[in-house]
Length: 160
Image 1 (tube, rainbow, N blue to C red):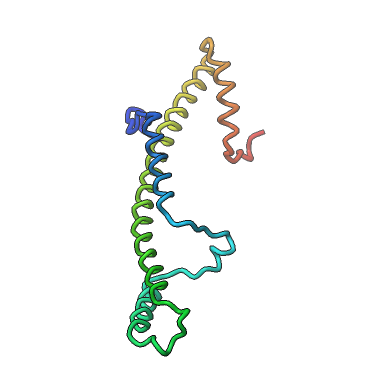
Image 2 (cartoon, one colour):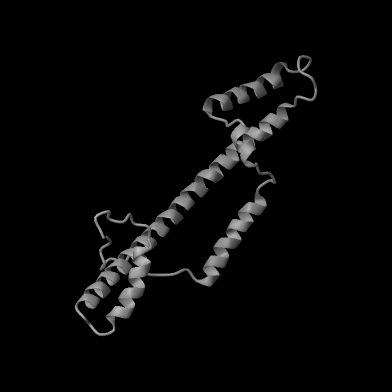
C-alpha cells in the first residue's frame, strides 16, 4: 500500500498539453515511411541482429567491389544499403520511443498506485465507520463494497 502522505503526482495534464503530445505523435507517424505488417508477416519476416547486419553490410561492400559482371542488374546494392540505413535510423528512433513509453508506463503506474492506495484506505475507513454505526456510512460502504468485492480477488473457500 502506498504511503498516504506521499503523493508524487498530484497534477493533471492540460488539454493543451494532451493536444501537443498527440500532435507530436502524429507528426512522428507522418514522417515515417508507409508500411505495416499483419500478424502472419510479423511472424514470418526475418529480424536483423548484429551478425546478420554485419553480413548484409559485407554483401553491399562486395557488390560494390566485384559485383559487376557477376550479379544480375536487378540486384542493387543501393537497395540493401538504403534498407540498412533506414534500419539504423529507426533503431535509434525506437530506442528513444521505448524510453518515452517506459516513462509513460512508470507515470501511469505511480498515478494508479497512488489513486488505488488512497481509495483502498478510504474504503477501509468507510468499512470501519459502517461497522461502528456512524450515520451515513452504510450507503457509501454498501456501494463501495460491491465495487471492491467485484475486483476479481479469489474468494476465500472457507467463507460460507
